[in-house]
Length: 107
Image (cartoon, rainbow, N blue to C red):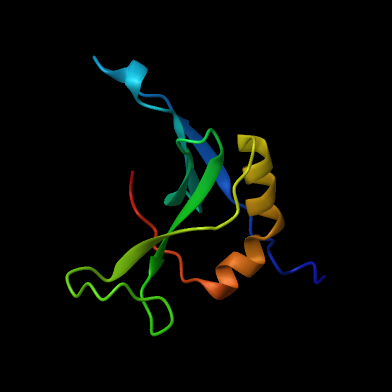
């Protein structure tokens, strides 16, 4: 690998719920790239963790909603721990960025 090429690395921020009904809401993690949120790691009803990315629509990935230029996708693979999901994301960072144009959102 060339020394001038910068390796893509995602970072993660844990969001702890607050407020009156926080006991009923599950914690989740922002997936960040260059300081902007590009997705989430969240826990489903079956106690597995899932990865969601915000992507820009194109011919291949389109939900036919004309009101928004981006959409959410959830990867099919589920993980038993958050750390497994984080490792998967960073190990496949180049492949994710190559296949999808990630939409960077502010928090």
